[in-house]
Length: 176
Image (tube, rainbow, N blue to C red; front, side, top):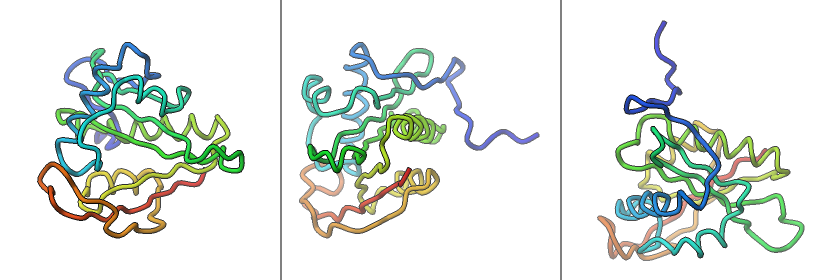
């Protein structure tokens, strides 16, 4: 029987998805820094502090992918508004360490997040992805996200291979 194309592959240990804890802080921010360095993940030039990250993301919907105990990816959500009518709408971020890409980590993280969101009363998960980030777009399409719009020339890339370039952001959405 052929291997499951969605199965997680490890370096020889155990790969799992677990709730994000403060003990993961340094590794989570390192994975984010690696994403920032690609120039394809965010307009942010550097990761926030852990306190800023912690304050901006809902604790009940934050997960890490662990390979033999090492953080190799993470996913988290932020509320899109303080207004009660938008309480079920969140914006997500998902990042995978360079050495773990292509091993099903992003998909496992998104699946766990979507289940958590659904169970937690969230009805819409949205996000923004640069059109140049083909891997992220493919991951989101496989998870059932759809493109609902484009913010044209949203920001000037300040770092990475696209430095000095105005970039569009594709708006993605998954209705639960």
